[in-house]
Image (cartoon, rainbow over all chains, first blue to last red; front, side, top):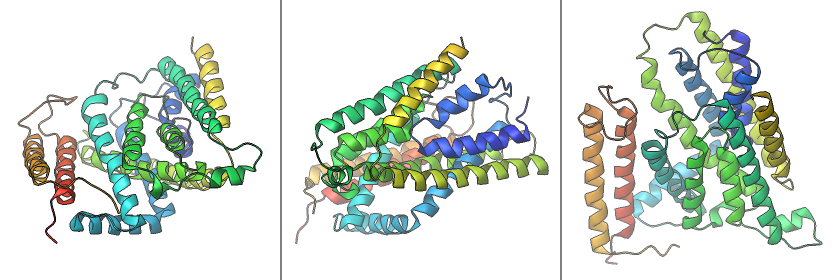
Length: 290
Length: 71
């Protein structure tokens, strides 16, 4: 059964909102339809263009949000690549993002993605949500050990690094952590934020690094799938295309609002609430899906 | 700003790697190789081709970073 209009709009909103929150959009996309007894077929050929458009909507939101940073990052990347030497924070950030994205993208696409192709089972995704919660809480436990006690949260955060100050090996490790997010239930933004915290970044900077790392990967996931749109056996009807586009816009708006909220939240907030949410949602889902 | 090891052999190795990646990208694009793909019946593997093209460019950039400078 193909996806209905309300379902499409709901999934668009859900994907956009949960893609950047450290709670696994893929996990929610696998678990929630089962909990709601929606029996649309995710392997239906018409579902692929839908996913492509949702990814492009989310990536567009991130590009719009960080448009000035991306302009500086791209210019910095080209300058540093041609010169063969890094000068200045923009060039360093550009190369950190390249180191965090390219090896992880290659290893994930070539070796891990084929292995996880059959991992889209709701029970497994629910279990992995609990694991994701454990990762977020664990990162905060380790972080608290390196914070100075009896100071305000702002002062504690100020003692940690900005994005452009982390080391290249740390950027590589944080980037590689994204591979775990190919398993439904493990959040890409969750593992990269947790990795960023362990690398000594401030919460807000860890979130920013996570969003910057996510942009090329989400955009690539969308753009690389575009050729498949033209291989569909049947052309999409105007109405279906309209619903899909509306869902993509909704996903983009939700992603934009989520990113703005999270950047403000992480000025002094922690990952704990999202960790507990994942554990609770995963546990309840496991009970309901029995 | 960064202390990246600069050596001619490493630089040459990275250029060779870049050429290899470029060749593999072309082979995936024309569908000659079916290694590490999920759909072995597909005539082309453009995703893998683009990925290896990116790796080729990244290797060339790395080679530029590691090449010894005369000045």
